[in-house]
Length: 307
Length: 307
Image (cartoon, rainbow over all chains, first blue to last red; front, side, top):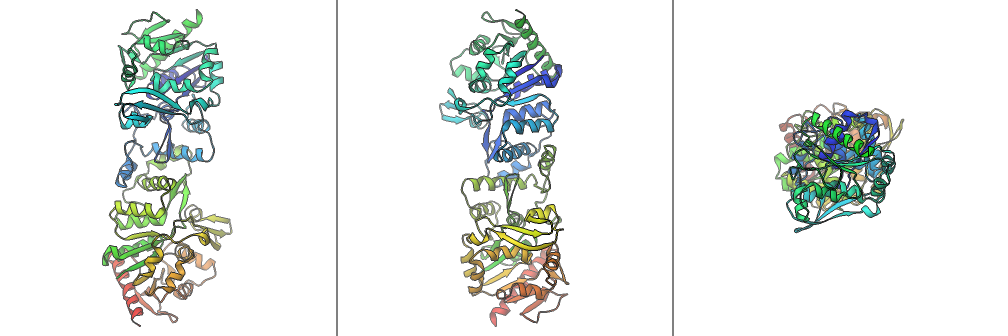
């Protein structure tokens, strides 16, 4: 069974890790948001791809939720001494990804090729496909003006109210190599419990991807990021409230209307009236949680496909 | 008394540190070789400037002879995991200099301005002037073909025989801001005991610098890199032998003929027949050695100037 997951960083990586535990890795493809990518200190940072790489290779710092286990910070200290911008943390080991990626991009390699090479080096057999090799950048229109994603997310800690979200470059971006094909041959497509507005929408904004999901024969199932009427973490709840959308699963279903066939919701939340749904505890703290949620999502997909 | 020192990395930095101990820092200018600069992993590395910055700010690793005291190597380990080139060592703290410099150069800042800013941040009051803000690159014509400086020096450990040395870009390079002026108003000009062929010649190859030394009123004194018929360290002896030049102080004097007024030689070597010279133990192991050699060079300069 070929499974494709559309995913952002932390939350999505947990689902993909769960899938990796219950399915042969070569049957798995993760289509990863790259609209959080940005240049910092001249280096190309791909936060979601890196989170997937760290998570699937067993290198992720689980407590922190981002970055690498056993990371050290000598670079940041030296940077501070020299007056460099220090609002975005770059660990010493993490830097190797950024420096090599930046060098290879400058040499004309694609983000897809570079990501595949990193995955191969670290023994990750899940196909990690950037949504696009073309630059797409999330900008937030806020009460404080227009902010680039990382400025809003990291530097301003999602504090400014957001009125509109823009994916610069998306209209001209091509889907990454293999993206459309992977969706086309997938038996199941999962949308990870990543932020729908910030992590999944940019993927859907790349021309061709939404249509491929609609055209595909595999059922599309989303794992809701809502647990007990709140988003698990990050700015989802605040963002939904700011955009005037009730923070509940019906809103998630409405957001993905026409795209998903079913929604996996938390056992503490109500089943949907509008769409097939199933309940399971969706909070993923442990390795077992991850596998269980992944299994539940596949069960739901099989149920929908069998209809 | 205004003193200017022409210098490469390690050996030269010791003399400049000696001068810093016996003279007010604002009276000191170091004109630094930049022909060893290169791009590695997409980052602009300025080895001699960095050695001066580390040495004069008290951050240098004295035992190792290069790099920073207390350096860590997590980046290099991670780089190796990812299959990155690891023949050139970049410490975690060292990276901050390379990353910031590369970013600021890309933004259009000059190497001079960036170097001055780093020096200011670290409380270095000696003026550190790159010989040029334009790219100059040392290439070695060897039995193994044409090698870029760091490939020859670091990767090949100076093993290939050198037939010719080329300073690419030198003919079109302008002296760095303040270089000609500093030489013009210097009361004494010292040529550090750096490698004459690899560290000092590139400085002299920048149009205008040699003439400024000739036109200047201050005496020019070189501290010989020869001790007991051998170069203290590095490839000087091997290089001289390969170029068919006897490894002795007369060769150094001949190399700088028309440029220097006197040569400071080691107490174990003979005084020169061809040029004013003075003897002192020139090996600089301790802080006191550095100050003593600097003092001796100034004494010799005063003697020559008084003639």
